[in-house]
Image (cartoon, helix red, strand yellow):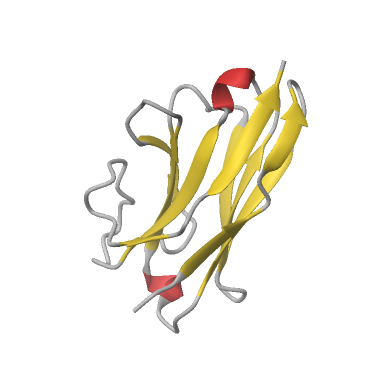
Length: 126
């Protein structure tokens, strides 16, 4: 069983930066692909970024590519989402998720992820 706890959300002005963290419990974290998703009010949860267990494969949604960077530190059981050049449309609750199926390629849809954090709010003001 894995527990995920996100942190680092908050209020930031457009153009600013913020880094989200997702701390995981469990000894097998380093075997799991990890994903970041977000959900704004009235919308479906959408893919933001994903990273393979080794960190060697990363994927990004088109809307954040070039602005966001996903990384992980398996020694610290933590995955990060560095967000730069933030826009008001990035405002959402951000969730991290873990895929325990040992896939090499990290999924880009919510369904394969079986562990989810509680979410952290990011608000970008214009």
